[in-house]
Image (cartoon, rainbow, N blue to C red; front, top):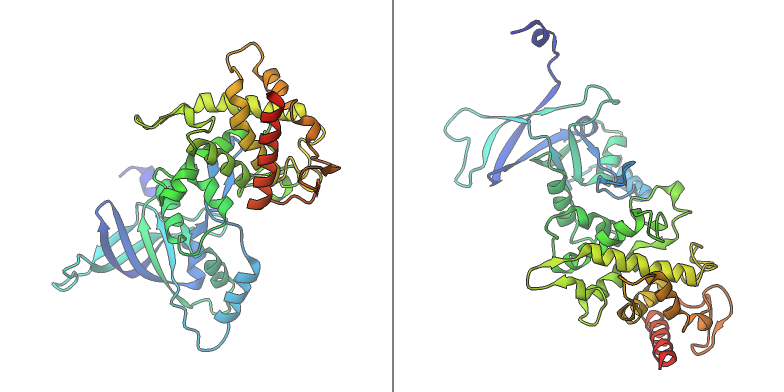
Amino acid sequence: MTGEQQRKPRQKVLERRALRVMQNENVPLYLFTLAAEEIEQVADIARISRDEAGKLIGYQRKEKKQHVRQIQDYLDSANVLFPNGLIMALPSDVRFKSSRGPATSDALGTTAGILEIPIADGLDQPRPGWIVDGQQRSLALARAANRRFPVPVAGFASSDLELQRDQFMRVNSVHPLPTNLVTELLPEVVAAPSPRLSARKLPSELVDMLNQDPASPFHNLIKRASTEPEESRQRVVTDNSLVEGLRESLKSSSGALYLYRNITAGTTDTEGIRQLLITYWTGVRNTFPDAWGRPPTESRLMHGVGIRAMSRLLDHVMVRVNLRGKDPVAAVERELAYIAPLCRWTDGTWEELGQPWNALQNTTKDISELANYLMRAYTDARR
């Protein structure tokens, strides 16, 4: 052993009696207990956010303070029974030592033993594990008066962030997560948990592109689950409206984006879609500069109802625009000029709809009425 090896301190570990359950031969599952005060030594909460390069990190929603307080009040009451355990992602290097004796395993392959879990050496050190489910409970437990309260934990040993996100979405499928949180996580999950979510995966990836591409008119205008509070004031477009508009166009055989999918080969020309979307929405921005980039309370173009209606108009406009032409953005502007005089994004009244500009809401009825009106007016004007 070298001198350097001799001087290297041994990492702190926490030993707990545990059951090892082999549901998956590559990912061991451990069932054990932790004291409330030990949770923050073992695992942290992976808040959803983005790094400086725009890459998505984490997956957990923001803290719900009232919910946490209600759990804490119960934990601090008398005669507490708290079977609601936590699900953790443990580091791959946890060590499990089987107990000695002939009766340590059963017919299902469940083995009793001792689990050694690395722990943080101080509150300023990174935790080795992550809370996958139960973040509100873990926050309440950390603040509870009884610091030694025993908490049931199911921990799977994997440092794979993709697997952690997948499990997070699956365990929360009964009590649905916020739509925008699920939508933003989807591009980071290889296999969506359901066909419904799978249909939103590509649209969410495209929304990421529109938000991060400097060439996009939506650059840094889209509000996502990872958007920091101080940035929210500048983000005026809700991602769900764009995701739904893209999903409709990709799904419908009459949609402009549908043509970029090769159903037989299972491939999609994402670069072609990128060019189409940036071209169309740049034309929209140039046609309505006074309505672009303003809060939805000041501009219904940036409101969900406007985004969805203009997304449906995209299917009619872009079939007439040659993306390889000399100036495709100008071609979009010429097409939108047919309906521009009829639009009331920031003031006035939509005459045919009989609605003040700010009365339109992000409802199925209003979206359909506005979209149908714009498409009908566009088609009539071109005849």
